[in-house]
Image (cartoon, rainbow, N blue to C red; front, side, top):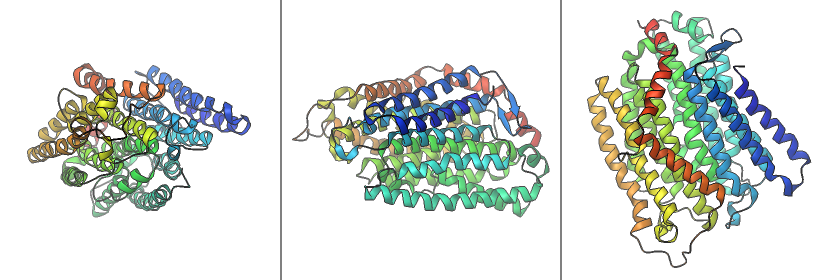
Length: 484
C-alpha cells in the first residue's frame, strides 16, 4: 500500500495519545519506545518501497524514488529527535531545569508533524501540498513553546508562530496566483498552462519568501536565533534538520516540477540568495556566545550551500541536494546530541562552558570535533563531499563567482567552528569540571550519527545510489518536457 508508511506514523501517534490517558506515570516510558518503534516500522516499509512507483486519489498522492529519499530523511530526523529527548522526558537528567513534561503529547505531536512532511513530498496538488506543509509546521509551533514555565521558551514560541503565520499567508497568496494563472490546482496541469508574465514573477517571489522562512534564507531568517535558543534543545535539533528538509521538498515540487523549464531565467535569484545567506550566517556566527544561537547561524549558512543545487536545471542538482541533506542531518545531529548531553548534565549552553571537555570526556569531544569539521567541509568527511557536489552544480551552471564566494565562506566557517574545538582541546579545564555520565540512549545516538557523518564522506557509492534511483523517476523528464 503506497500510503502505508504515513498511516503507520499517524496510527502510532493516536495509540500513544490514547495510552497516555490510562498509563500510570511510572509506566509511561513505553510511550517513547512506541514512538521510536512506529517510526522505525514506517522507515522499514519506506525502504521496502524502493523501485515502486504509483499514485492515489487521481494523481494527488504519488510515490516515486525522490519521495522515498525525502521520507527517509523525515523518519530518520523523527527517530533521532525521540532519542535526543528521551532523557529529558523521562527525568533522567542531572540538570532539573532541562527536564520536559507531558511525554505522551510530545511524541504524538512530533509524529503528526513527521506525517505531514511525508505527505508533503508525495503531494501533486496545490491544496494537498499546502495542507501537508501546515500539518508539518503547526505542530512545530507547539513544540517550540513546550516549556511554558521558561520565559525564553514562551518568547521563542510567540515569535515563531507570528512569523510562521505571516510566511504561510505570503506563501498561500503566491500559490493562489499560480492557481489564477492556470485555473487548476494540479501541479502537472499548472506546468503546462502557465505563461511568463509579471504575475508569475510575483508568484515566484511570494513563494520564495514564504518557503525562505522554513529554510532560514536571508532576509527571512530573523526568527532563527531566538527560536533556536529558546526552544527545548531536542526541538531545536529537529527544527534544524527536519524543517529545513521539508522546505527543500516543497521548493523542489514547486520549482522543479512546475517551473523547471524556466529555471534559466531566475537562477540568478537563487545565486544571490545563496550568497547573502551563507555570508551573513557565517559572519554573524563568529560573534555568538550561546551555542544554540551559534548553531542557528550555522544552519542559516548551510541553507545557502543547499540552494546552490537549484542552479540549473541539471540532472546532478537534485541528487547533490539530497546527498548534502543526508550529510547535513547526520553531521548536525552529532553536534546537537553533544550539546544536549552537556546541557543535561551541567545546564550550560555557552561556548566557553566547553573548556576542557576533551580531558573529562574525550570520546564525546572527539565526536563533537568530527561534527564541526564536517559542517566546515573538511575532507574526507561527508560535509566536504556534499559541498563538492553542490559546488560542481553551480560551476556547471556558469556561476564560478558563486563557487569562489562559497569557498571563502567555508574558510570563514572553519574559524568559528574551531572556536569550539579550541575550548575543548586547548583552553584550561573549568575548575568544577568532572567526568560526565552519558545515558545509553544518547551514547548510541552520538555513535550512530558520528558514523553517518564519516561514512558518507569516505564511501562514494551512496551518492551513486541516490543518483541512479532518482534518475529512474520522472522528475527530470518533467523538467525537460516543460522547458520553454
